[in-house]
Image (cartoon, rainbow, N blue to C red):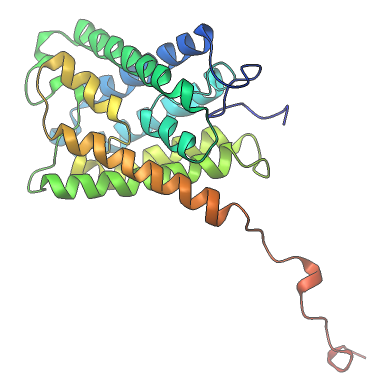
Length: 259
């Protein structure tokens, strides 16, 4: 549909795949996401500052995603997340030949974002416990719990992406709002457990630049598993659904009407 943002789809005119401009868009969009999101984590330190800081971080990520979807959806699809890219490809909404290139572009953008956070906030932001705003298991939570939490929240994210971005019955403005609010809600809910990554690059980029990798496998595997499950569930079970039509309603019986 011409009036849709193009978010999460193959950019218009690319047909089967991708272009250098689309990949550049994905690099820039992911850079902005990681710089704003992890920068907010470094600036506010929600683990120490409490619920108000957690809410502020959640809003920073949510607003960043919302803006990026509307700004870059028509350029690259604004995936900014390997989980989204792979989930869409599994559901046959994105070409597999573009997947490795998109993931590479996302990683490059993420690394640039983490380097920018380091440059702005200084060397202390690279040290523990900040580690450039990476995710880490909350106090008392195991790696297995982190993995499960990431599966669940990324499963929900892909349901929303599939419903708002790949289903033409959804209204176009729903894409950015739906995805941004899902990210914010997930951080508020799961942030104290796992940091609410949703996104392997969101965790790996600051990990690589900081040189430390707390529970990295859970933050790669969890989002990927959740994304595939969410995309497949929507595509093959939920997409055919629609509300009952008026024609299927029980007609009012003649004797039940007021005289």
